[in-house]
Structure formats: structure tokens, C-alpha cells
Amino acid sequence: MSATSLSVQDPSRVPDDNPLVEGLERLPVRSTVIVIFGGTGDLAQRKLLPALYNLAHEGALPDHIELVGIARRPLTDDGFRERAREAIGRFSRRAPDAAVLDGLLRGVHHLSGSFDSDGLFDQLQELLSELDVSTGRALNRVFYLATAPEFFAAIVDQLGRRGMHEHDGREVRVVIEKPFGYDLESARRQNHAVLHYLDESQVFRIDHYLGKETVQNLMALRFANAFFEPVWNRNYIDHVQITAAEDIGIGGRAGYYESAGALRDLVQNHMLQLLALLTMEPPTAFEANRLRDEKLKVLEAIVPPAPSEVAAMAVRGQYSAGVVGGSESPAYRSEEGVAADSRTETFAALRLHVSNWRWAGVPFYLRTGKRLSRKLTEIAVTLKPVPHLAFQSSGSVGVQSNQIILTVQPDEGVSVSLGAKIPGARMRIRPVNMEFHYGTSFLSESPEAYERLILDAMRGDATLFTRNDEIEALWGIVDPILSAWHADTRSPIAQYPAGSAGPVEAATLLEDGRAWRRL
Ligand code: BG6
Image (cartoon, rainbow, N blue to C red; front, top):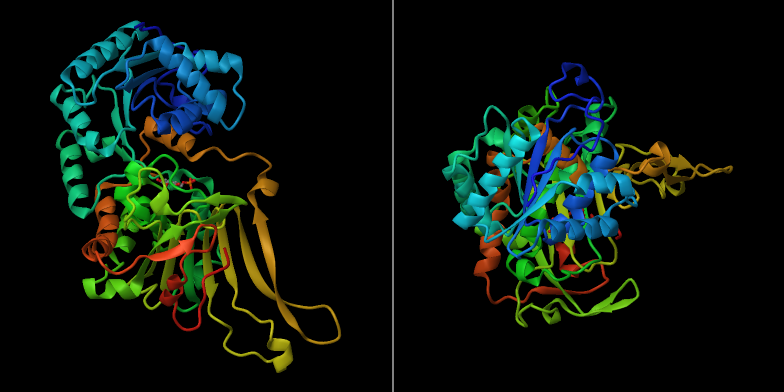
């Protein structure tokens, strides 16, 4: 294993501690070693390594960066380098430039071993010291935990027992992938284990939705425009629908998905994060703790259902055989690795209320599912109808409540529906849309969520990461639903054909004549 260093940029360009770089758009990142536990896993190959490549391509990485992959399988440095090269070639959003890729991969290292073995951490400690020596200065360290969750606490424990959670006046940060916990109790235990050695400011719990440009745009939309805030409350908003529909199934992840299900996989994290950003009070600064304080407040205002209320406010479903995008899809229970009598939900829909002054009485409807008719993540805010229509009844037929639709993916953008007069002698109205599309407005491709998040973790900016109390508040909301569903081993799980909009039972959550938006 070599301890060579690599220089992705001209070293004279951004010296390590140069105060002049402050204020430049590209914020300074100190020289860093990134250690990826699970370096040959799916996430590292599909997302993390391509994200690092794209950061290198944009010159956003520090002058000096070292990359250490750790996996159980035996692999040499060269073997890891070749796998990384292949993964980047396959999954990077832009075709790799040979020089940048060679620069990035010149100094990669690989260690093999079980994630909780002493031997592995002996080797790691030695390698990190060698890298400091060969670089000529202590490097910041980022430990990226992209392993199965049962190893998170063991890895942090190993680091802590050896004093590797601190480093010679440099920063040590730990990025932890989802799922963080399995329920409220296990999330608390995990927080406890992680924070035994680490300070909260060193911990970066990932929710990749927070790294998506369009999710951050939700804050720009709300807090950089004057005309939304006056209507952003119970006086003007009738209801909100948040949809995270996927056409894909579970791929090769039956092992994980069978014990997770849609509620844990998407609602507890991504969807509730969208809800929090949509409903929180304006933070006084876009700064990690200010923002997370506001999210926490609003999450705590979501009253978790009592066991007797679960059936009326949550619907689960499972896909049966069908056709998605022209291809036949098997039923969930026939997927490889799934039990023939599985009760795991592949679809979940909820009605939630935010019990505070701003939102009391406004229903928030959330739905997510695998193998639905198409991929769509959107937030649809429907305003109340106007109080009086002065047009003759025929003219009023086409009048609909205004809607503000934020499309997170695909076709990223925002659209506002307005009632407009149909040209002609008569006063007839129909809805039209005012649209903003990312693609046409900015003419540049958005970075992948992981690019932003890896860079933020290296810089120590936790604004887009989930804090310990926040993660527990998120689990607190879904925990009673999980328990009620777990306890109910008899009632049939609603089925929906793959390729459809989900189970018809989901409609029962919407009251007062409301309907789910078309998928
Ligand atoms: C992950 C879930 O967190 O998010 C997956 O584990 C899901 O099941 C994925 O497919 C969706 O992410 P995206 O960015 O494709 O919407």
C-alpha cells in the first residue's frame, strides 16, 4: 500500500489556510483524507466515487486529497483503483476526463477487513499516520460510513477507543448514511453510541434529499420572495400533497427492504424533511443550528397518532403483478428474496397535521410507493378558493383553486396555476400555468446531491444534515404507525397493480371532496 499523495489542483492556487479564499464562491476546503467504509458497495460505486470525481472535475476538492476505501473483500490498492475507475466511468453524470480521473485516482488506498475487527483499525491508524507524514502536515479526516447500519456504532467505537475521533488540531468528521435507526428506540441508542466519543458538530447524518438543488430551492422560493409568505398559512392554504412516486422496484435490495418498507425507507426521512422545510418558520440565518432549530420545532408540532387513530390516517399497500413502462413486473411477494407472505409495505400514504398557530387545521397528505406509474417527486400546495365569484355561473365553471407545484424531480421547476379568461366574447375562465423550469432558466446541469453533501461534510457545514434531536423527532412521528402496522398481523394489505397510481384505499385519507393529484 503506498502513501503517495495526489494534487488535483495547482497547489499554489488555494493554499491550505489562505484567508483570502473566504468570500470566493468556492469555499475553502482543507486538505483531507476521506475514508469510505463500504468502499466497494453499491452506494460508493454509484454515488460517492462519481460525486468525488465531479467535484474534482470542477476544481472543488481541496488541493490535497487522499482516498481510502475499506471493504470486507480482499483487494489491493490497484484493484480498488480499477473498480473506482469503472464505477466513475459508468455512473458519473459527465464523461470522465482522463487527466482529472488519473489525478483523482493516483493516490487511492484500500484496506480489507471486517468493519469491527481490531486488525483493520490497526492498519487504518497506521495508514492515516503515514499519509500525514508523506503529506508533510496533519490532514483533516472524514470517515464516511456507507456500510450496513449495524456497523455504525461499532466503527465509531473503534475510532473512539483509539482516540481517532480527534486529530492533532485538525478536524475529524463522521458521515453516517441512512438508515439511522430502525425505530425511535434504536435511533436513540445509536445517537447515544455515536455521541459517546464524537461531538454533535462532528456528526453528519445524511439525507440525500437535502442535497438536491430543488429541495434547497424550496427555501429560496419561500424566503427570497415576498409574495409567498403572506399566504403561507392556514388562512390561505387548503391542503398540501407531497408525492414521492417511483417506477422502480426494490432492485437487488430485498434483504434491506423487507425489514424496512416504504415508511422507513422514504417517509421517515426524505418526505418528512420536505414537509419540515415547507412548514418551518423562517430561520434568522441559513446556518446549521438555526435552520435545524426551526425544523425541529415544526417536527415536534406534528402530533404522532394514537394507536387507535392510525387506521384513519395511514394506508399501506403492496404492489401486485402489472406492467410498468411497457415491461411486465412481478408482484412484490414474487420478487427474489421476498417472503411469499410478506407484509412489508411498498406504498404508504399518510394524513398529518402540524399543530401550531400557522398550520392548525391544514391537512398534509403524503404518499410514496415503488412500482407506481412513473417517477415523480413533487409538493403541491393548494390554496383555498376565492371567497366570492362575480361571474355568471357558466363563466365560473373553470375556476379552480390556485396551486403552487414544486417539482423536485424529474422536470425540476415550479409552476403556479392561475385562473385566466379564455379569449372570446364571453367571460369564461380556465386554469393556466406560470412555469419556471430549471433546465431552461439556468442552462446548466444541477450537481448531484452527493456532490454538495460530500463537500459540505469536508467543510464542516452541517446545514443540510440531520441533527440528533431532529432524527429522533422524525422517528417519533412514524413510530406509532410502525408499531400499529407491526402489531396488525391479520388484516389484508391493500394491493395495487404495478404501474398504477397506488391502492384505491389511499383515497380514504382525503376528506371534503379532495382527491390525489394524477400521477
Ligand atoms: C433512497 C431509498 O433513500 O432513496 C430508495 O432507500 C429510493 O429506496 C431512493 O429509491 C430515492 O432517491 P431518489 O434520489 O432517486 O429520489
